[in-house]
Length: 95
Image 1 (cartoon, rainbow, N blue to C red):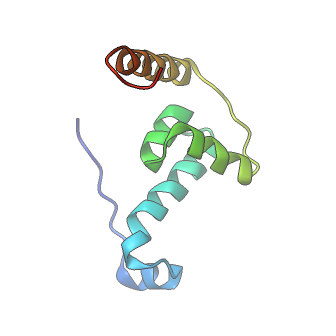
Image 2 (image 1 turned 60 degrees about the vertical axis):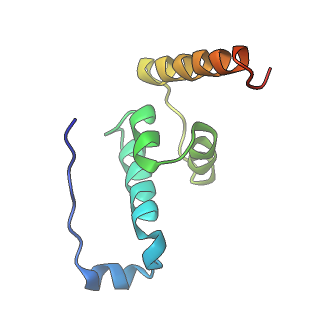
């Protein structure tokens, strides 16, 4: 799988007033929220870009007043998460 790097000059990053240790996480989260809000990225992909878990990303969308639009991809990801949880519960994880 490939990746894409976005270069942002230091003067712009300084204007954003984001602490250097938080820049990558904050910018990924903001990009994910905006791409999802503009319907340019499905929710599951936006959540992965944000680096947040599903519940935290849903909470963030709610705080921003962005409605949830579930797709087949989102549903499939939820099913995969549930299957993984069930496997871990069967192997000594939480019930």
